Structures are given as C-alpha cells and as structure tokens.
Image (cartoon, rainbow, N blue to C red):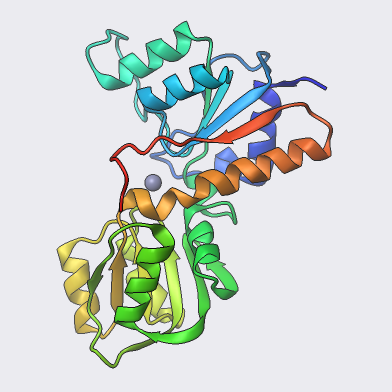
Length: 257
Ligand SMILES: [Zn+2]
C-alpha cells in the first residue's frame, strides 16, 4: 500500500502528539504536501543542506527531522542564508519535511531514552524531559564519564564529583536541559547527562555534590535518529505500507571522535 506524507505525519502524531510541544516550538509538517506519495523517508537530527542532498541521492520524498528547520515566520526565500537555501532546495527537489521536536522529547523515542538504552539504564522512568534509571553497576563519576564517551562516541565534560563519588542512578536529558539538574537530584539521581551545561548550573551542581556530564547537544540527541527510523519502519511494516526509512549518515560537525 503506498504511503503519503500524511501517513507518516499521522503516525508521528500518534506517538508524539504535536500539540504537546512547547509554545516556542514549531513541529509538524513544515514543507511539502500531505497527499504526496512516499516510498523513502530520511530521518535526521537537522534538515541541513547535506541532509537534503542525501535525501536526493536516496530518492527520498520526505525528511523527518528532530529540530524544526525554522521557528519563526520568514519574509522572503532569498537564498542568501542557509535556511532559505535548504527550503528552496527541498521545494525544487519535491521533498517534504516533518519535524518532531519537543513533542518527541517526552517519549521513549527521545534522544534521552536512546542514550539510556546505550548506557543500559535499568528501571527507566520519566519525569517531563528527564529519563532516570539505574546503571547496571554503580560507577565512580570518572568511570561513568569514560563509559558515556564510549557509548556516545563523543568527548564528555564532567562537572563536579569527588574521586569517591559513586553514581548509581543517572538522569538523562538530551539536548539543552541543564536547568533540570535539581529536579534530577530530587528524583534520586547522583548525576545528569545533558548536552549544554552553563557555568552557573555547573557551579551550583558541583557545590551540591551533584555531577553534571555535558556530552554536547548533538551527541546526546543523535542516537534518536536510528531509533526513530527503526520504530517508524516497524510501525508502517506492520500495517503493510511499502515505505523504506533511512537514518541519515550526515555528521554536521564531522566525526565526533
Ligand atoms: Zn535538540
């Protein structure tokens, strides 16, 4: 059965309702047409020009990105900035774009949940954007940092943690969520892995004996790409749609490690 852009849009809305996104956010169908037939879909963290080119090479008619390409209204589409170039290229190539952002962040398909899977967290529970679980075995903060670097293939910056600090329970909030470190501590975690740690939060957490691990925004969310692609593939296979999902291989900042 042929799928359309709307088929994928409805499926994503079922898993991660667009109306649950934050007010500043702009998820949903952003480019293209709902009735366009779809045989191949490329899933990516960001709809960059490289990702659009990748979609063209794959002959994908739809890109599903985590971050919306734009958050605010535009007054022109002059190709003198990167965003306009991407938009125009998508239109020229008849490629549609659906974004699933903060609506996805509160689901098991979030970057946080994907990182929790990579770190084998057990008894995973969720509170807002925070995913909290137990490590398979308690680890000193430094060893947890090393393990996280190996799992995410990215350098991790560690704030706080004495040599003897043991981490049993880890909270994860992929992307930019250092604000939630106190909430993570209240939930029983000894450390929070997130992507953008500001100095004042690093300092306050360290003074509270809490460990912050900063893996960078990209590395703490990139794991969701293959998880989301596989999940959407399975769901549409189950209802006999002939559509193929691909996880983007574009690395916007080059290889992390
Ligand atoms: Zn993000």
